[in-house]
Image (cartoon, rainbow, N blue to C red; front, top):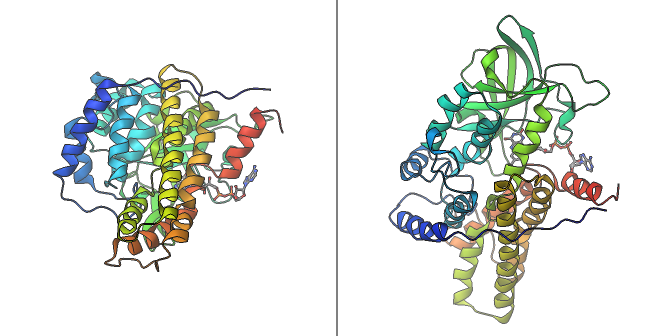
Length: 379
Ligand SMILES: Cc1cc2nc3c(=O)[nH]c(=O)nc-3n(C[C@H](O)[C@H](O)[C@H](O)COP(=O)(O)OP(=O)(O)OC[C@H]3O[C@@H](n4cnc5c(N)ncnc54)[C@H](O)[C@@H]3O)c2cc1C
């Protein structure tokens, strides 16, 4: 039986110095905080301002526009931005997973053309994995790229594609050869310019009334040979490494910190022992998750496979953030009201509407627990 261990995170003195700089930058920033849910505000101007400071793609090599820092420094900046609900969603996917994927598997042209624009906060990505009838079971994707002269012809559909209507590129997973005995074989990834003829985006409005998701259709979309990322047929291996980035950061446990902050402000008006206990429990839980996230960053820096550790963190982290509205309501049972003048009431409404999605996006909790169970030899 395997034993999961989380190595001691590498401390970062540079990161702690950066923390003060980020706080100073945020103090001088007068933009809107996005309700109570971090990680959903889409503001290209804010992304560009961060890019100018060198706070996007911090771990990318300098020759591709990155800061040449380690992942530990990146986490410090991200934590500070999430803590104040800064609108980072425009560049978040590109900096978290698309840029690192291109750096690892992309060709030189893709790196030269795209990665420095990501680091500048000017190039945004969406994720083309889920399909109608194919969400958790990615090996069953049916979008197909067929080889044609000089490139590929793509037909199919993706669903739940966050920000597809306002991003520049998608990294698309599709089938390039029929599934044989090994279902995960024959999948490939492509870099897709969202303006390519034959792509249409249909909006899906979420439970909070926002347009974030889309259904994206590909009808005879032509992609050149240069659009292939990595090697043909290696899509499964590549996507697994991409998901480790997607599942291991503080965005998987800090999305609802805005509501906690409003709760603490409200609690000051009516302090109680129960309130103090609740805050203590939340902070203890948060610091454990933070330690795990930093530990995974250390593993990734050392080029160790952290897919399983990331699955565990994502499960624990998103269950933690999903429980926040209920935890808070038991102590301060204010009526949740979207857009209310009372910050706590508005924040509560916002997180109640967003909480269900935490344990679905990026892989459902059942699927993640299946991965952990398998590693322990339990299935
Ligand atoms: C806010 C949000 C943003 C998203 N953004 C994107 C995006 O940008 N790009 C993208 O590609 N996708 C995105 N998704 C889609 C998300 O990744 C999928 O919804 C998710 O992987 C589940 O797929 P599904 O909806 O098809 O559900 P299904 O896979 O049909 O699952 C339905 C239920 O069955 C359970 N289940 C399925 N398989 C198993 C199994 N093997 N063992 C046990 N239980 C199982 C699941 O846990 C779930 O409870 C997003 C989803 C959300 C909520």
